[in-house]
Structure formats: structure tokens, C-alpha cells
Image 1 (cartoon, rainbow, N blue to C red):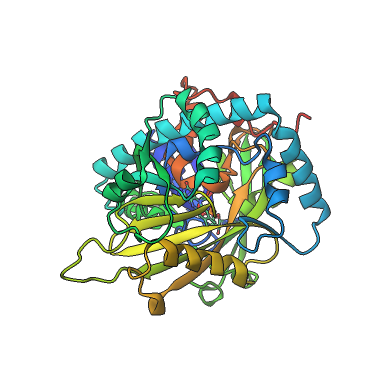
Image 2 (cartoon, rainbow, N blue to C red):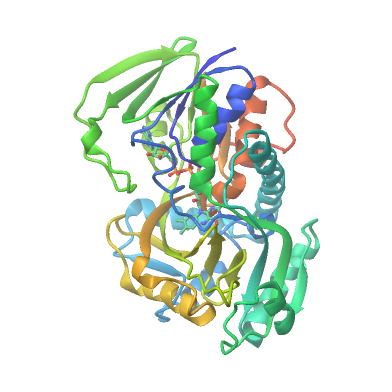
Length: 441
Ligand SMILES: Cc1cc2nc3c(=O)[nH]c(=O)nc-3n(C[C@H](O)[C@H](O)[C@H](O)COP(=O)(O)OP(=O)(O)OC[C@H]3O[C@@H](n4cnc5c(N)ncnc54)[C@H](O)[C@@H]3O)c2cc1C
């Protein structure tokens, strides 16, 4: 048994705590906010869709982004002038878009996502977590041009073990009967094994199960440094005053409370966009870029005569790259990728795209007066796969940088990390996930 310390209680930190506790380690989680899943894991689209887990660094991606530049509903936006760090990140992203890199990164992420989905279901069953799960995902193709673009992706999917069906419009409407009949729809791709579920609810349920198993959560604790101390690791943390945090997931005030330094056997960095600042002084380069996205969550209207008024499960509007999710008695639309910019600045054009997609597909389902708007920062590495494994500093481990797929990859990543800590042979090849891949080059 090792005394393991985890930094960050997003979905990745909580699932890592679970995998390590399962192995019998003594686990404590440091989290700067006042509960679990308050940052990127707070209000994501909830897709657990291995076939859709793919690196953003892909051949032709730059051309697609630039080709959309003057479209007000474009999926990717640049907020302000790019910083030097963002410029470097974009250069690495472009290099990772080469076909050979893309292919191997995609395969690695797909394998991890498939493994992760099985583990998510297993953990939900054994820990009795209700996470508003719904089965199946439908990709909506509005016209011939959407269909032509989708065909290229389907060729890639056909080489994998992911099950999918190309449906005509009427078959799509059988899968999702509440789709607005007047919005043009030519076809859809149905992924029967994918699912949607509430990531935050899963994290909260798992945290409760872990507390019962003596895992300690130190909330309002911001880790400011990790230092090697012989064969041990020193963790320096500030205890932030309670009132400095908000439950809305907005940035807290700078911690002004007590600072303490303690030594432990090992630390796992699951701090997402907070990870580079902790890693850099150790000589570990983690080029994580905050790629902001938006989500709007609405209660679904209830009509006695039309019980099927909202979405049933997960949908993706391929034209606008906007996800639509059913989460219990609510629906959520999520999308947009904003490079640069600040967490608190809401881009009205990005939000207008989300409202438009709701209007197009489920115009009477959403109670818009009760909308909850959220902006979150995806912790994005330039090449795609998250960084999972040992750093060069003894006792310092990493499980972070899951970008747009952290919920879909969390349970599998946590298991991979626990296998590496235990010296077991993992179910997934760890090579493409090495946290040292930017430190070596
Ligand atoms: C609009 C949108 C839609 C998305 N949709 C999906 C989807 O459908 N499916 C999917 O799989 N993924 C999706 N994602 C991505 C997914 O939400 C993230 O990949 C995932 O939440 C990352 O989890 P995490 O635990 O690494 O990060 P976070 O949830 O951000 O957690 C990191 C935690 O570390 C803490 N922390 C940071 N630094 C420190 C420190 N120094 N000391 C103490 N604590 C610290 C933070 O407070 C935070 O709680 C979406 C993201 C967005 C923005």
C-alpha cells in the first residue's frame, strides 16, 4: 500500500482515486474548489461515444477551420491575438495532424475509450451510481455536403470494431421521434453502443462511495508546488478560505489561507489546465491549452399528450459540431471551440449557434426561460491522447490533458494509471500516452 495524493477532483481525479483505492492504496485528493467536478467536468455534453473520440489534430483540419473562418456559426474561434504559448501549441497541433501521427493517436484513443466505456458501466453498477444514462447516439446530416463529409469518417470507422449504421431520414426520425419535421435532414449515422450520461452526477456519486471507503477529499486546497524529497514527494498546498470558492465553477479568489507542506510516497497530477504550472518546475513539459466550449442546459417541457417532445439520447449536429444530450428531465446543447480568451467572457455568437441548433431540431422541447449557460475549458494537448503515466521525477505520476473526451476516457485512463503504478501489464498500450513525449523532443 502506498500513500497516494491526487491533485484535482474533476472526473479524471475522482476516477483515479477510485482505481487506486481499489488497489488498496491510501488515497487523499487535493482540490482547490469546494466540491468535485466544478470545472470542465461540470456541464459537458456527456457523450460516452468511443467512435467519436478522435484527435482534433487530423489531416485537413487546418483547411476546414480556415474555410469556416467568416461563418458566424463556425465551430472554432480565436479570441484575441494568439499568445506565444498558443502559437507554439498550434504549431505542435499542425505537426500532429500528419496522417501517420493521426492514425496511431486515433487508434490509441479509440481503444482507451472502448475500454473506458466498459469500466464506466461496471463502476456505475458496482457503486450503484445513477448518472442519467441513455443509450445510442445519432449524428445528424442536414444535406448532401454533410453526407459527403461524413462518408470519409465512416470509411475510417469501418476499419474499427465500432458498430454503426447509416440511416435515411425517416429511420432517423424513428430513433428520435421528436426531431423537428421541417428542418432538412438527409441522413444520419447511428452508433448503437454509444451512450450519454451526466458526468458531474457520476463524479458526485463516486466521491460519496469513496468517502465511505476512507478516501479523503481536501477541498479548498490549492496545490502550489510539488517537490522531490529523496524517495518521497513534498506537496505544498494553500488552504483557501471557504468564501473564496463558488459552486458555479467560476475561478476562485487567490488563496489567502494557511500554507502547508507535507511529504508523501507518490502524487498523481489530475489538474487539467492547472497541470502545466505544477509540472514545469519539475522539468516536465505538458503543453495543455485551454480550449473553451459552451453548454446550455434546459428543463424539458412536459406535455401529457406528447411524452416524446425532447431528445431521447445523444445527437450531434455535424454541420455545426453541436452536441444535443438528454440528461434525465433536462436537455443540453454543447459545442464551440474557443482558443484564447477568458473563462468569464461569454461569446454571444457561440451561444447563438447553440440556440439555433435547439430551434432547428427541438423547437418546443426546451424551457428557454430556465436556461443555464456554462463555459468550460477543455484541457487540450496538441496531439490528442491524454498524458498518462510516470514523470521523470520518482513518485510523480500524471493523468491529465483529456481535451474534448475526458468523460469518455476517465475510467479507462484511471485504470491504466493504476496498472502502471502497480507494475501490472495494462489492457491498453501505454506508449502513445506517455507524459514524457514533449520533454524528450
Ligand atoms: C462544451 C464541452 C463539451 C464537452 N463534452 C464532452 C463529452 O461529451 N464527452 C467527453 O468525454 N468530454 C467532453 N468534454 C470534455 C470533458 O469535460 C473534459 O475532458 C473533462 O471534464 C476533463 O476532466 P478533468 O478532471 O481532467 O478536468 P477538470 O474537470 O477541469 O478537473 C480538474 C480539477 O483540478 C483542479 N485543480 C487544478 N489545479 C489545481 C491545483 N493546483 N490544486 C488543486 N486543485 C487543482 C480544478 O479545480 C479542477 O477541479 C466537453 C468539454 C466541454 C467544454
